Length: 180
Length: 180
DNA sequence: TTCGTCATGTAATGGGTTACATGATTAC
DNA sequence: GTAATCATGTAACCCATTACATGACGAA
Image 1: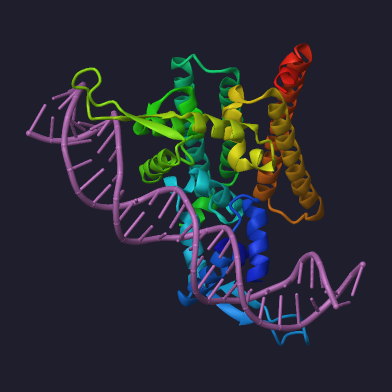
Image 2: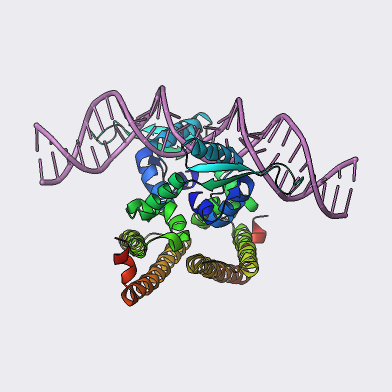
């Protein structure tokens, strides 16, 4: 939510739509959690509300446009700077990646590498399991192998991204040092 | 749970481990929901409990081994026969596929086809969205394209599975008609 | 005029995890 | 002897969905 509101101020209804296209149909967020959350962030001083009712004559129902306060931007920056394991587990990696454009290059690399080793661990566990047991039916086997190939693909993809990132850091390393 | 207990009777602790390897580390089930669920199914007459305390001398703590009753097997068969949309959405497709060995060939094909068209729909929606909007940063674009390729791969995989299934039905079509 | 979409919100419900309680067994 | 795993269970808590309430606007 902070990430989207940083790109541009939005009202709740529009914010939800964008969240849902961003996060995919799975993990879609409902009004029942969106509005209370906005309220809370408002109370915490992370957001500022701007009731756009009067604006531009008699425009539809009054929509409440939210934008980040200075504190909200600060909080977003903190969260984007966080490069710990919580950044590369299944729940959050997608979201973190979606806001890579607002993330520092060195944090980007750390997250990509963390994600890759996480997947490699998983791959190792599954393929170890596959080696020990043999009495699996065709379908379980098929599922396992397909899963393994998917992980491999993901790992390769991450590898390419990491290479690209490293190349661009090497090309102009000023950016990282300047921000110190 | 019914599917695993049909393969072999198990006690709760072991059942949980198998569920977690089957479902993956994500969506892992906890004791807090496993044991009450077993209890409920026992009360519903789907399972029979067998306290294996006395068996084989002084074996560890008494473990309660559950197995399917006739009613439980019936329920499992009902659920495996169900070929509706609920069988091919993200939540359940994996589980349904894992028990394909116990599923009728025609239901298998229906589920695979349902899953495939579900993914094709999704693919279409995403790529339509990609065509309209242009102002996306490198990373969002990268994520979108990688997602698209993943879906394509999945669709191809399903296509191969469907072809194999159809071939084996054509080779010995007695099975489907015999069971009428 | 009715339906679909836009738009904001609240309250109850549900159900799964977390945390706790207990205790036996194996390995170091 | 002590830590880790095996093994079963309960109760509180969290938090998101669901369902409901309200209302305006555009299109058929």
